[in-house]
Length: 80
Image 1 (cartoon, rainbow, N blue to C red):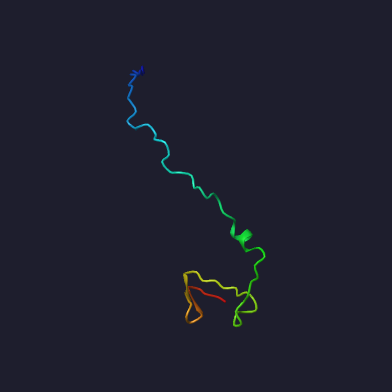
Image 2 (image 1 turned 45 degrees about the horizontal axis):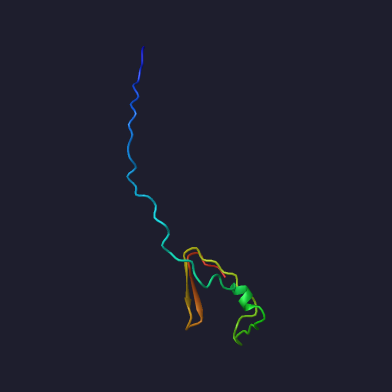
């Protein structure tokens, strides 16, 4: 069995236009302080009706916060 292949050089011009320079300007204000640094020295106050300890909860489907009713609704294999 005699196999052969012919290679032909096909040159194709690039169809993408050259990259343009970035048109966005650098922010003149720069990076501000991080939230942690900004909060240093501030006193944290808690509401009188806040919980005394963290609440561990889980739901496989979803969770809805009811701010006005002060409730959290858990859906799908929920546990508290």
